[in-house]
Amino acid sequence: MKWIYGLIDMQSFYASCEAASRPEFAWARRENDDSTDPPLVVSGDPERRSGIILAATPTAKRAGIENAMRLGEALQRCPGVIVVKPRMQFYLETSVRIQQVIEYMFPLYEQFSVDEAFFAFPHPSALFPDPVDAACELKGAIWDLFRIRCRIGLAHNKWMAKMTNKQAKTHPDGIVWWTERDVQTNLHSLSVFDMWGLKRRAEVLYYEFGARTIGDVAQIPEVKLQRRFGVWGTVIHRWSHGQDFSAMNPDSYDVPHKGISHRTTLPRDFYKRTEIIIVIQELLDEVCRRARSAGQKGRRVGLGLTYESLQGGFYKAKTLNFCSNESHDLYPFLLELLDKWWTGDGVRAVSVSLDLLQKSDALQLSLFEDVIKRNSLSKTVDDIRTKYGETSIMRAVSLQEAGQLLDRSKKIGGHYM
Image (cartoon, rainbow, N blue to C red; front, side, top):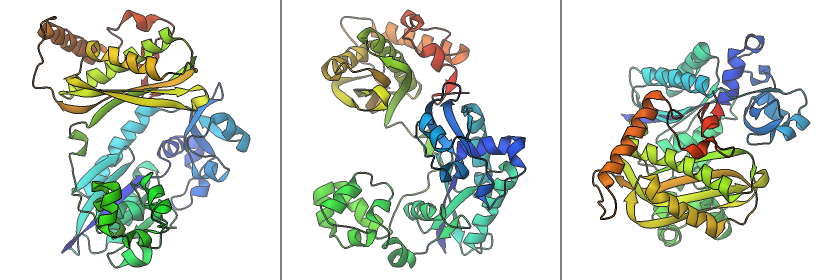
């Protein structure tokens, strides 16, 4: 008996939630006909005609609208498009309910993102005699319960399920199943840029190795890939042959963080250092709070700035000779990065990160300050914010015009609830 792995993802999730929840649109929508969706997009600020497109229905996409497109350009391409503000709390609640349905039908399950999940089942078996029928049943249940369409890829391992899921997005039934016999006929004929998970490595394979298809990659000796990519060379070699030994991880959302970051887009371009450092401080406080909550601390801090019109900028990091999850320790190094790399251009987005994490079960003492007392203070502040909200206690600088904490506290995932 073998196992079949599936990857399910929701079509245009945020936009689908909006279309399904609005009576004026819901009655006309059909499960297997996405042209029955309204031309609807979810975007930041419809009143000011600003922000970017977070999600668009298939009808809106056929009109030329794309995710991450600026709203103004989207309105030019499709003047009649319906623009709605994001409701992140609603999307997250819907996601939780959908994930519960998937887990109920396929107990061996791993959440992959807010709108994706892996699942696995034995085949052949009495419960799952036909993999496509099992996928159809799940797909139909999600439509019946939530009026959201989904696509499902089935294969003999998780990476191949991701690849078949990409094919399912253009398949009439929204379901594609490849067996091990389909590797040479179906997988190897795809472009090297279709290999999921490679990102810029696909460009190296294309330009340096002359690999046009995944089949071309499979012909490259593993040792050559290792020489160019290190450990990733072995991974690429396996993937090109349709192999993946990744196990299902039902507790994927509970594993320790590899890195913690926080980013915010500013309401206008910030040109003053005094404004930018307030935002950096607020983001660092949040990153450190999350690190403490996870029982971790890190020894590399990173700062990213995105310039005017969300074009250009930098991301730089500094490795320290100590680990910390205290803003007091890390803030001076972020200022050092700011002063070294900022060109003086207007700043529209700021990100702060902390990685090279380890467990915070050891305490680094100091001759010059009471570390135990400071840690106790941080824990007290964290407890107050957890119980009463993040604005219940905050730095005075957050009350200045440049402060973003009060506005961010009204959002989930960077968007208003």
